[in-house]
Length: 170
Image 1 (cartoon, rainbow, N blue to C red):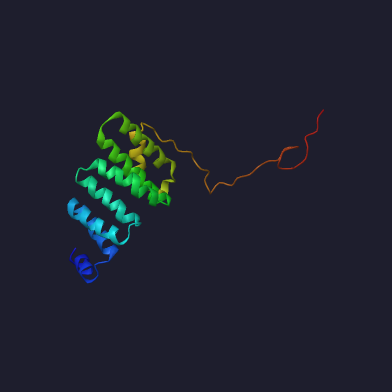
Image 2: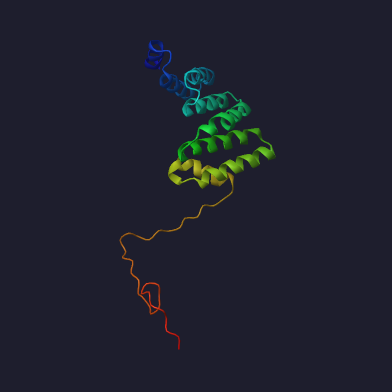
């Protein structure tokens, strides 16, 4: 923490240091201090995904679920360009909406969970997918893939696509 503070003292425009210190404050459950750092980072780079996401998470850590959701929906979501950043948006939106505790918000959370599981598995931590499946009461099914050690062979039949020959009719 001291190193990040020194970096900020040396350069007040050090966006990365503000972001890193903000996440460190989140880990220490210091949401208010995290919020201040993320806002400072946003001052110097308003289009930075990590700072905007961090601000939403800092608001959430302080029990400001509606503010966190609004931040996520209106500011962070438009900045999500990759599957990984979209996964973060959907995950946190769903968790914030569940905090509201009303049926309409539950439906919104279900929509976010559905978008999350539609993304590639490697776009998120496995426990996020598990949480989404559990929240939606879905049992995931797995399609086995052929083993790469077994040879795949095909036996052509007359007239099959493999031979390209028409099948004679009697």
